[in-house]
Image (cartoon, rainbow, N blue to C red; front, top):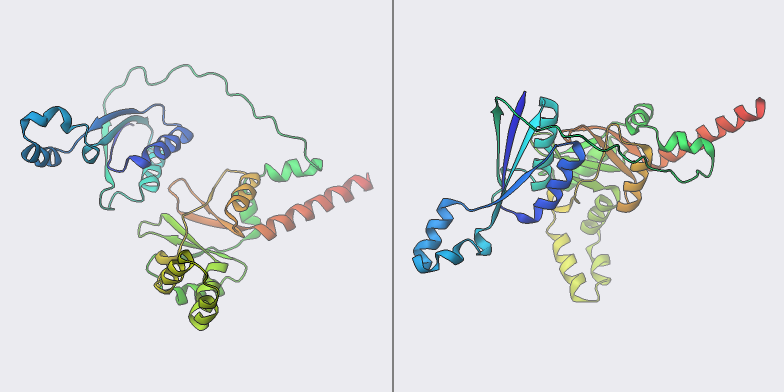
Length: 294
């Protein structure tokens, strides 16, 4: 089945990320058009007069982008829709835009001859057995670790988040999911601990304030009540991606663990940094012992 996906973006800052996400999952091509909503145009026409018609569509307030993409197959369609939802933060959000999917009866020229991809050259590993580990699919490792992710909703009170994390003591990052099951944020153990201690001993945090920025941070922290108030942007590793990617994202985002998600960004597993290291060390020891016995 072939589909035409139309996305009308109100927030132009989302455009580069959406194009990149679609390119990575294999959407064959995207057409981009400038567009304006009729209601907005009528409002501006009544204010500006017909003499200003030429300047109407140059106004920043009226700029939108409409994206058109022809997609074959239900699987790729589901991925493309999920990526669009993730990038804009959900199309039910005000001023986010609109997504439409229409059936296509026939296409010509959709598939072009592709150049052979250039294979990535890996740098030499410190130990040969680490090559196997770092290129191991992360979902295989998640199955071995068998860690159940801590999943909460955006409106979960922070004290309940702490209780939820206590039920999974080996999992140090809570996953915040929207109503549709999509990952929308993360809450680390350190953030939860800071919140708990903030409400127990606020004077400790107050005594460390030395400038206006820290005053504003204190005010913001005192207003935090739910997971959505304290969560950070979502970071994840997808099924099929490698342990190397998991290590890199944990390191770049200073996280002790990561959720494993499917193509629709539903949390399906979890991996811990410490236990990934433990598996690597164990595997290295086993390979060394095997080599010595031969």
